[in-house]
Length: 300
Image 1 (cartoon, rainbow, N blue to C red):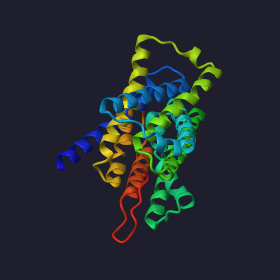
Image 2 (cartoon, rainbow, N blue to C red):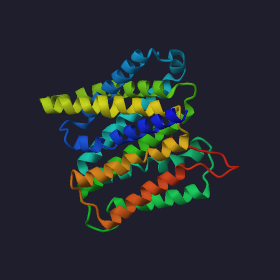
Image 3 (cartoon, rainbow, N blue to C red):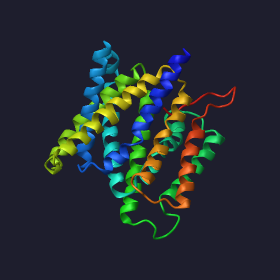
Image 4 (cartoon, rainbow, N blue to C red):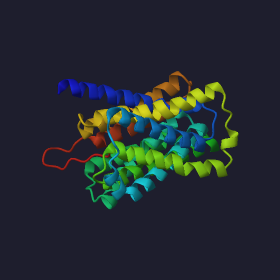
């Protein structure tokens, strides 16, 4: 069992490391955000279906059919979430976009009492306040004139993506009886399919110049950053407790921030650095299990 737990941790770390590089990939991938989201959804779905086929596993058709509507709605929200996130990477730094996006757990905490009837503890209230102040610092609003209109647009896109992701998390909590991998297959597939008419109507398809380098990066985005990363994540879920899954998921923004500084040379002021620490620490602390005698809650 210890060997399986160690392997699960390595799978989760690998998954979060891959997720943490999506912003860098987007920086070098000159395609419209809608097209990228569509391709990612379709390619990721095919990859996961192939993995299931190799493992001899079949989609739980009965369970999926009973929750098809909420699964499809959450899939649409996931696709829109990707578009906003990819747009955020265009308008602001990878670090700022990623950190604003990781306000999603905070938005989930704020909505949980109304949607899931979960108790908002004092610790979580403090974490929410700390994360909101951290976002204020990261966004650049703390010092006038430091963030142009494009930077503000990037922050707003990332926050919009965070709200949509929080909505997907809350909807997934209410979808019972469907295996996590099946949920993702349906959601990714829905995201990819519903974005096809969007890409065609907006003319994004005609804006794609499919050079060899673009084709390779698209395959990496669809197969590695979506299919492989989700497969690795699911390989860890059966052997790790929920709070471990949640805490290790914060490797994603940490890696994104470090790579944005090392590879893209994106500047970060001391106040923004403080904001980054507040957001990641507050969200991580909020994921810790409650003390004995209190109900454990997770946001994954």
